[in-house]
Image (cartoon, rainbow, N blue to C red; front, side, top):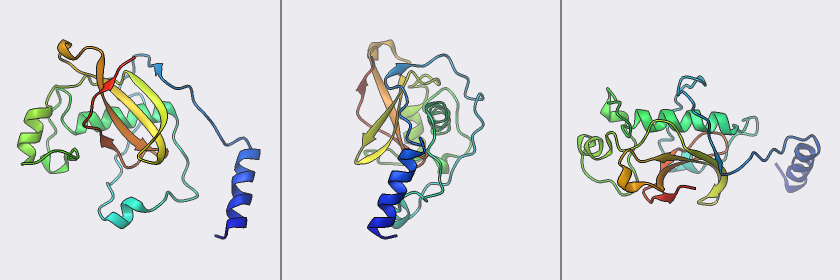
Length: 166
């Protein structure tokens, strides 16, 4: 696609009202992980797949979908009181070393299963979503862990640094 075609596409999408900006940094209502159907997407396996831009026919997700995807990610990766049956599917954090049993031991029941906050944001140069989860341990009150993803609900990652929960 040449620059002229891309510029026309951007103008067309903007003119048709497809550009949406959801409310940011809002507190979420209590939401069940079952409230939005979710099918896990396979993680990109090669650096080329991770770097590939989203397809033009992909539809960006909204805040409700971002929350459902992040809640499922937190559950399936052992951060809640749920124990995932297949540890081979755990995704590592950028700083984790060792085996998956150790990861689960460190993560297990550390976060509440329901998201506390969702925000549209640009993270690591990619526009997407940031979804925050409170710690179970009250000593960490005011801090949360965040799951980041692109605008299409892909490339999920648990950030290893805490965020301030507002």
